Length: 87
View 1: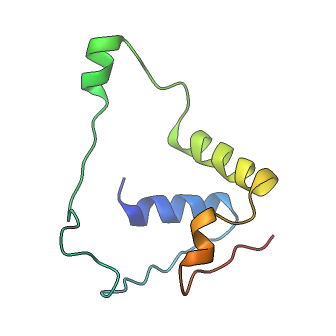
View 2: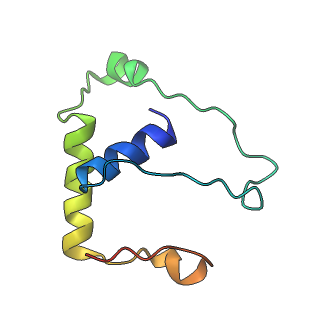
View 3: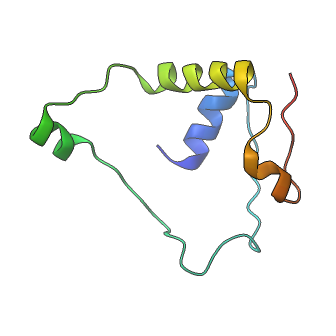
């Protein structure tokens, strides 16, 4: 999944139809990775581990945790321009 895919999934799970992503070129670091892809098959082949949830189930569980226990992330106090999530 791309960052855009995940943002749209999270938005949809939170009741929003479309998320607009704006890229701030000033925040991109010189050594950022342009493309990063993960594949859990190597872990599965060594350990037998398999996911027990779909991506949507895991995201929804995370959203519910955040709504119940954390109104803000600790780094938000140090980031200018951060949008504060309000229920």
